[in-house]
Image (cartoon, rainbow, N blue to C red; front, side):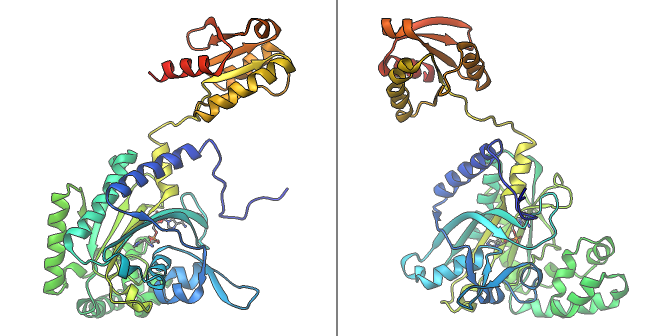
Length: 420
Ligand code: HAM
């Protein structure tokens, strides 16, 4: 038997109602916040992620699915969507059309990570990006959207929005040096990875999950204490606007994010419900990404929700069952089947979920099937019914039986009464 590739998972029909629920709620809110859908390709030139995400990040260094295509081009399966959406924004000159570009994208990402609960090699994200404006109220609005999606989906009781500001091109290098000095003093306590990070990407050491590193991180000098005046007052404004938008949040100076394009405000929506994987969603500002990718100088901010993780939380709270048919047509004999098919077709065209037996089984076994599918009405049609032009209908809920005209109009009328 051929099994799926490690870290790649099927989402089975019993599970898809949760995904549809999450995506429907998100799409509805995204629309009311003025976001439009964009769809980006799975493959990009490797160089895009190298330049966009940063060549020293874990994603680019260790986790990308890269290969040479038959034309010898070095390509990568997107490990995230922000760089791709920025590429699409530049390539299609969207800044000319949309001075404030608000886009969203839902789809799979690919990272060669060690698979575990809540961590896959193909996983799905709901991505939200805004290009064109840098404003503290917009930053709060983007976080408000994330909070509102969590709320609408019904998982906001289990998450915390953690917010931080990681400085700008002026103040971050100064802090970086202060942090390097501090980490060097505590070098012995750091894990191998963090020692390596020390020179190249020291902020990532603040994010390390190992216990000793965490201890070092907790006592480290805080970036928020070393922000320049401009960044500090901007951050204060963001926090004030979060209150106005009624978004519960905490400030966590250890949120640094693992992608190099971030500047300024960053945030994570975390939970304690999913074991080692605490981030359900994450994002932040990326004011230089578009320019660094060869586009105009346009600021940006966004986030991505990890759908597997949001679905896991949703499942802990809500039971979604597959839809049940309103009618199950139990037909006895070919003549009955042929008479019922146009009726079944008409009901389906009108959006009424209807099932019909194809296998010419006994009435008893067809009724069992109607029961198993949790059909509301079992419709029985045999020779007698054909002669009279009427069908026997069993209300499976009330356990009552009656007969109605064997016509699509009669069944549609019954369906309408059911809706009422
Ligand atoms: P990220 O933090 O790499 O950010 O991923 C965002 C979310 O995707 C995570 O919080 C997590 O829920 C989910 N996720 C990440 N990796 C995995 C995995 N291997 N398995 C399951 N879920 C995973 C980004 O991707 C940025 N592009 C977000 C962003 C958008 N920033 C600005 N705009």
